[in-house]
Image 1 (cartoon, helix red, strand yellow):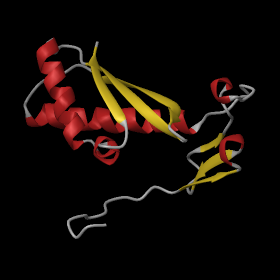
Image 2 (cartoon, rainbow, N blue to C red; image 1 turned 90 degrees about the vertical axis):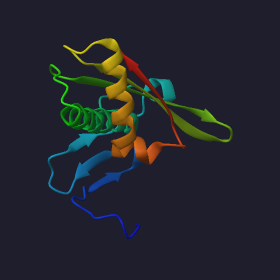
Image 3 (cartoon, helix red, strand yellow; image 1 turned 45 degrees about the horizontal axis):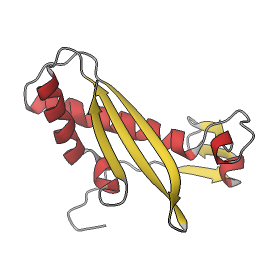
Image 4 (cartoon, rainbow, N blue to C red; image 1 turned 45 degrees about the vertical axis):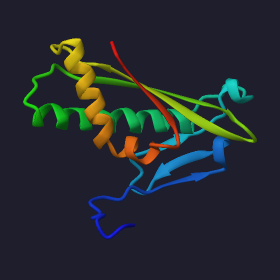
Length: 141
């Protein structure tokens, strides 16, 4: 961590048996079965997967970043909805991710919505962490 980094909160989660196991947070708020999606060769058994968990975290974090940017710019929005589409695929010999973030910003014109999405993408911790490593596409609906 750099000298400029000042920790505010640390989340803790442990998974057991990878994609066919379970993931649990240290406070047990999160305690979910994991299963391999059919698209990756799994049987589609009940359970979540890392891509769904990443999509949930990214969409929530991005929505908060967008709210911050809107407040700083004094832009009033209705309830902002961010949907994250996280795709896993082959990337050479390994696997890679691609993300599409789709924003619905009621009460905001299309140009302003796009500006807010772009600005949120600059400050969102997930966007900053993935920049240069994961292709992220922004859309407004």
